[in-house]
Every structure is written in C-alpha cells, then in structure tokens.
Length: 391
Image (cartoon, rainbow, N blue to C red; front, side):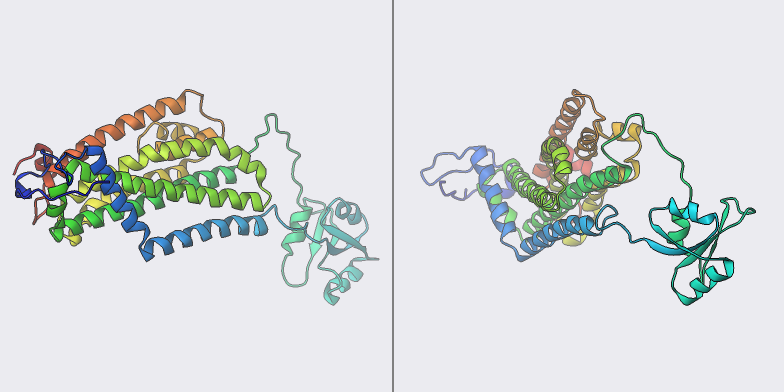
C-alpha cells in the first residue's frame, strides 16, 4: 500500500479533508483504501495489547470449562444414585419395593425397625400408618431424610402429546449464551473505540490523522477494524463452544445449533456495526476521558438490553417475537427463536432487513456527528449542534 503524505493545510479548517489523502506520487488515495488503512491500524494496535490477549484467553477458557463442568456435574451426568437402605415393617415393604432408589431391609416390628435406624444400619424406617395420607410413616434418627421422602413421593404419570427436543433450562441457557457473546464482545470493542477516539482528541493526534485520512474514512476504519475483531472474538467463542460440546458428547445439541449459529453471525455483524457506530459518534462528542461515561452509558444500556431481554423473556413467545424485530435485540432474539423452531422461514429475512436499515441510518447519523465534532475540544459538544454542524 502506498504511504500517505501529510497535507500542509491546517486540518482544523477541513475536518473531512475533501481533497482526500495523497500517495507518494501525488495521486489521490480512495476512500476505501483510507478506510482499510485505519482498520488495519485498529486491528494491529488492539490485538497486540496484553489486556486483549489475556482477556480473550480467559473468556475462551471459561467457556470451555463451563461446558465441560456442566457435562460432569450436570443433573444428567454421572452414575445413577446408589440405593438407600431402609427398614420396612409389614405392608410398607410393597411401597418401598416400588421405589428404585430404596432397598428394603425387613424388620419384625416397629421397635426392631427403630433399633436398625439407631444403629446406623439403615438410613430410615418405613412403617405402615393408616392415618397418614400416603399410608406410610418414615422414622429417622435426627432429621427427615430428603432422599427417602422424595423416593416415596407419588408423582402422577404424565403423557406428552407433542414432545419437545428442548427444555426450559436449555431455552434459558441458549438465550443467555447468545446474549452473553453479543454483550461481552460489543462492550469490549465499543470501549476501545471510545478510549482510542478520546485519546486521539485529547493528545491532538486526531489533527495529524485528519491531514491524511478524511473523517468519514477514519470513523469507517474504526468501525470496520473493531467489527473484524468482534466477529473474530465471536467466532472463536463459537468454535470453543463447539469443541466443548463435541468433547463432552453433546453432538446432538451441536447439530441443532449449526443453522442458528450461522444466522447469529450474520445478525451479530449488523448489530455490532450499529453499536460501534453509536460508540464512535458518541465518543467524538467529548475530548476528556472523564466525560466518556456520559456517552458510554446509553450505548451499554442498548447492549445489555438483548442479554437481559432473552434471560427474562426466554419463555415468553410474544416477547421474544417482538424483540426479534427490534434492531438492538434482534441479533440475539431471532437466532434463539430459530433454534427452537418458533420463527417462520421469512421472519429472519424481514428482521435482518429492519436491522440493516437501522444500521444504515445509525451509521449515517454517526458519521455526521463524528465529522462535525472530531476537532472540537473542551466541553462536550451538544448532540443537536453536532447533527446541525454548527460551530
């Protein structure tokens, strides 16, 4: 790529550098090449930092460890519970025999059963009791044995007419996983956009950058570079999760996730660009690190909305359907609905169209704000003034 030369004209007078950057031979450099140059700078600067490398490794290890731990300690993992020895008297033996987790130990009478409990040979005793609602009474030494009581509890037989491949717990976990990936990636990259933009303004480096790169290309490069990093992070998380599912023998779940994951990556890309545009435009309004909270907080609220939305509304079909058409929640809600087969074939296309349109509008407005505010120092630039372009 050709090296860019600094235009000697004062940069403050031309925040968008309409003449364009020039190469060594004097030929103008296209907006795309300028954007790509900034994107490459953003990527190379961030991925080489220790904080980025360490946080990425920790996140991937936590994801892999969480999947492996859930397979080991989850309710469906491990051996069946060992049977519990209980003393039985008379007709109680028939009831205990029907409990798979209890092993009956015959006793001649109630006193003999109590002696077995006191000696520790059995965990409890079960004797017939006509006055008890269940027909039996449990005798224990110090406290009611939960495993025995649970084994004796009578549960009605349930018939499912349309069995589902997924459970409420799985619904919650899938939604939380998609929301977590979107939230953690968007917050991390968004914070870097804000920090870098404000640092460049505070140190006046932005004036040097604008001498070589138009403001629109500078913002586009930041958004593009951080989007590449964000998608790369999301892809790495998905790959590690897939590895964890494969290693722990959860291939069936991995097969179910394949198509929704593809849609998630597509929605993630548009949603991330939308959020990155908000961060970039907001960061250009301030020139001091202590003022960044005022622009980061609204953007972070929009990022956390999808996560908490799917967490609290995962079992609400109407709520999930509405969120799948809202630009800020669609990147998470629609893939979750697709995973559970709750969306028609045309719904992700319409949702993606709405998201793409919203992204275009946000990027257009953010570009205008960025161009009109980037060279303004001191107090925060009012949003209306930045949109109007007033001095």
